Amino acid sequence: MTVDPHGADPREAIAAGRTTIGIELGSTRIKAVLIGPGHAPLASGSHDWENQFVDRVWTYSLDAVWSGLQAAVAALLADAEAQHGVRPTTVGAIGVSAMMHGYLAFDAADELLVPFRTWRNTTTGAAAAELTDLFGHNIPLRWSIAHLRQAELDAEPHVPDITFVTTLAGYVHWKLTGRKVLGIGDASGLFPIDTAVHAYDERVLAAYPGLDVAPLLPEILLAGQDAGSLTEAGAALLDPTGTLQAGIPLCPPEGDAGTGMVATNAVAPRTGNVSVGTSIFAMVVLEKALTSVHHELDLVTTPSGDLVAMVHCNNGASELGAWAEVFGQFAAALGATASADDVFGVLLREALRGDADGGGLLAYNYLSGEPITGLDEGRPLVVRTPDSRLTLANFMRTQVYSAFGTLSLGMRVLRGEGVELDAMFAHGGLFRTEGVAQRLLAAAVGAPVTVGSTAGEGGAWGIAVLAAYLGAAPEQDLAGYLEDRVFGGAVATTVEPDPDDVRGFDTYLERYSAGLAIEQAAVEAL
Image 1 (tube, rainbow, N blue to C red):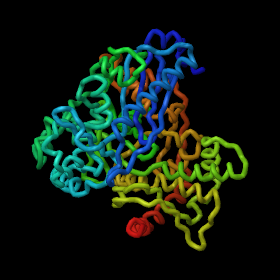
Image 2: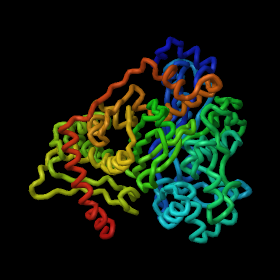
Image 3: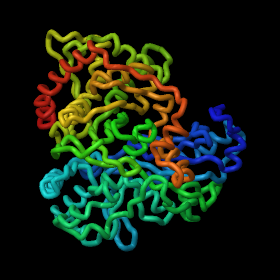
Image 4: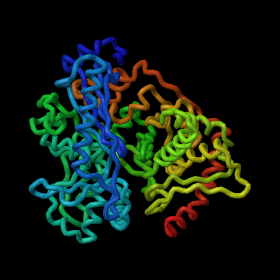
C-alpha cells in the first residue's frame, strides 16, 4: 500500500476529498494518478492506445479518447479502493494534460470538422516555412497554427466553417467543464505568445495572412487560475458509473511539455528537463530571448508563462521498446520467463558494457519524420560496416544513443546561443532502470542529469501537482511552491557527464550526422 511521506492517512485523505487527480493523454498510454496532500501518488490507472495512420494522417478517434479516459479513471478508482479500502467520490481538483500541438477544428455546432491531426504529422512544411519567414518566429511543422494555415493553403473545404481550434488537452477540458481555455504552456504550441503580457502575440496575430484567427483561439490561463469545474455532463463523460461527482474544480489544461517541467521541478530560469516517451524533448527556461531564429528550437512557455526554448524530436523510445519486445520474444522461445520491465532493464544495463562510441554501429529510431534533421518521413535503421563490433552491448548502446541523437543536435544550437544550465532533470519510463539512460543522456547533452523518485510517474503526476497548486496560487508562485512544498527533501540522483562517454558519443554523433543520407535514401526507396 502506498503511503504519504508527509504522514497523512491515505484512507482519510481519499474519503475527505483532500486529494487531486491528474490525467495525461500520452502517445501510447492514457494515465490517471491520484495524489495525496503531500503530493505522493496514492493510486493510478492507465489505458494503452495507439495512433492510427488513416489517409496518410496520424490520428486518434474521439471515441478512443473517451473510452480510454473512462478506462484509465475506472482503473484509478478501483486501485484506490484496492489499496486503501475507499473509492473516491470527489477530489480537491482535477487536471488534464495531453500531447501538445496538433489540430482539432470545430464548427458552430461544436462538431469536429476533420479527424484529429496529431503532432506526429509532418505535412505542413509549406505553411511552417511561410509563417516562420513572415513572423520572424520559428513555427514548427506540428504547431496547431501550421496545421490551420496548411489547410488554408490546400483550400480544404472545412476551413470556412471553423469557429474554434484547440489542442487535445483543451478539447477534453472543454467537454468536462464547458470552458474553452488553455494553460499558457499548451497555448504556446498553438500560436506564438507575448511573454511580457501572457497573451497571444498581437503583432503576429496582425501579420497572419489568412483567417482572422484571434476569435478561433482558446482563452489563455496561467497555472493556478480558475479554469472551471466538472459539469454534470463532464462527470458522466469521465466516469459513467457516477462515482465521481460534479463540481470538482479543474486547473488550466496543459501540454505534456509543461507537465514534464513541473514533474521535474524545472520551471525556474537556468533549469531544464528532458522528457522521454514516444517523442523526446528538452525544455530549457531562458534568462533572455535568443538572438536568432533557429528551426531546431521552439519558443514556448512554462505553465506560469516564462520563456522556454524547446528541442522537440518526433522520435523517442519507441524503437527501443520494439527491440526489447523482440528480445523478450526470443527469451520466451528459449523457455525463459521474464516480464517486459525485466527484459528492458537487462538490455539497458548491457548498454553500459558497450564501447563508448557504440563499436562503430549506427542506428536511427525514425518511425516518423524528424524536422530537426530535415526528414518528412522515417525508416528505423541499423547500419554497420565490416569492421564494426556487433555485440549485444554495442547494439543496445547504439539504440540508446539513437534515441538521444537528434536531441543532442538541437542542444548544441542552444549552447551556440550562450545558454547555460545549472540543472537538467529527466523523466519518463526509460529512467526507471537506474543509472543507464541517465548516464548516456548526460554524455549526449554535455550537462549533469538529475533523476528524481517521481521520474517514472511523468506528466500525469505533473498535472496532478498543478491541480493541487490551485489552492496555493494566491499566496505563492509556482517555482516556490514546487521547491518548498513538493520537492523539498525529495530523493534525487545526479550524474555528471563521464569524459569517456562524452568522447564516445561525440564520435557516434559524427557518424550519425554523416549517415543521414542513408536514412533519406531509405525513405525514398522503401
